Length: 333
Image 1 (cartoon, rainbow, N blue to C red):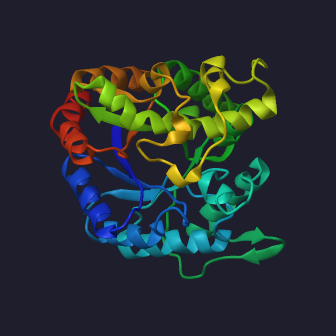
Image 2: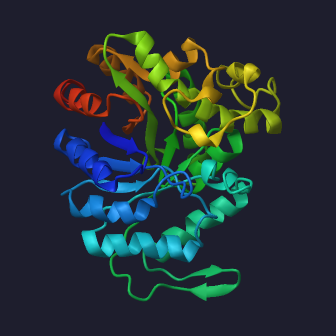
């Protein structure tokens, strides 16, 4: 199992770079950042510094979207980083949540997302494609490679990930929901004539190592609020009891009342006060290292290839170090 670290690009950028260096030193192979240009600093500028100051870390956004930048700009950005640092990037992409809603826009349609996946990957790898009827190719790309991993929850999005994406990003660490969603992605891949196992599965969630469970929950409760934004969209689209989405995912948002993106991804987010302890425990990894190892083994047995640690709490360094000293060695023994 691979491991990644997920950070927000809060200033100073040098602190983000140092945490990425610390993660690589502890055995993490992927470095991810949020991508929401109003709420945080521009990630791709910082990605360049991360790549410069690490040796083998693969770097990318978790996640970008089809609308913040034009598709050729996104592709050229990745291709430039790859040309400079040797194909060490990955494009995590989704419909767009905070980046779009903060600017007063709606997330993109799945049709636009599917087309963006094809176009960005083709351009970044040097192939000709078409944008709005215009044939286009980046002529200076040589031997470029860009895996595109798609974030998804709902049935249509899971199907699209299986049909088109090189990887599937699931932002929660509940084994029951992971099994349900991985099965859907792999079935869609098989139906599209792809090898289902060729789709990399990345589970991303907060991890907090320590014995004070109550404190860890309060540091990670924000995550249930963030996931709740996507769940609310699913409920509005499919209904709470449609059978299209597991009630294990949707039931907890009944007490949700709006969301303030000014606190997005932050410990103590007041918009997450509706999230019960049970959801925090299911969606996140909390407790001593042994508890993390047990959950990660269960996820690995379900086909998870990477666990990406959301480090948005008051113990970033301690969690990275604990994973390097105890969790990664136990998983990879």
